Length: 281
Image (tube, rainbow, N blue to C red; front, side, top):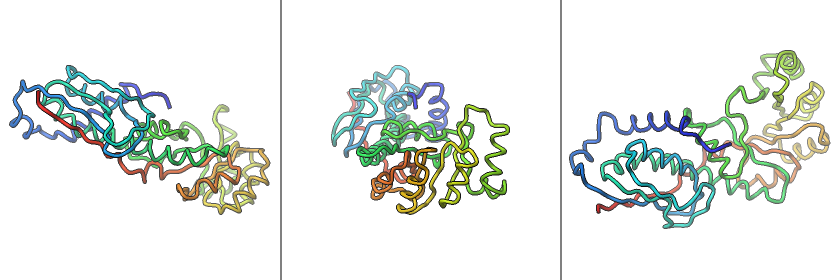
């Protein structure tokens, strides 16, 4: 995924600030003088991988375009405890009003990237590539998928128009894998690939015969996946999915599949432990 553009970030920042501010920040407006100047740094309290730096900067700039911001690091860098991630100078009120939203975005994205990085490291010796999924926080998909990409994964579909994935319920509704794929081939734009979810070798063969480009091996055992790889012999690309964890991903990769998709790199990623340290000039 390419770097996020301001046109994509602005609506997310607007909603987040509206949510956080409500009708106004009583504490900051009444306790802090309007002309008070301050400086702050954001540090990592524990090791993490940086992601979302441009978003955090945009939050501060949205609150106050006059804030001076320095970012000595870049997305994708691994940082240790107490390393400085960002420096902010300017009106104290502005820094305090932007702090929580900026940290929330940054902590979430860094956490996802760091978790993804650990998964990707397990695949170094194998051809399999890690994919993310559409199991994302509503409204924040573009951020979470950007974070997985920073961590080294490849994006699966960002939305339903990015590709075709025929899942179990589609197959039931259509009547069979063959019927579902045939209907797609009749009307689908030729540039889109067709992926079919399967749960056994009989379905794998049916998906190939029907004309699928990719076959998902859903919740299969290691032995079943290995047999599927030997049976398919490279005729289609194979994606392993379902209950993928940091503990078993290397074993899955050893079967010879082309892709491994995991939703846990997003929904089970702990937030990065970041802190904004603030002082008045």
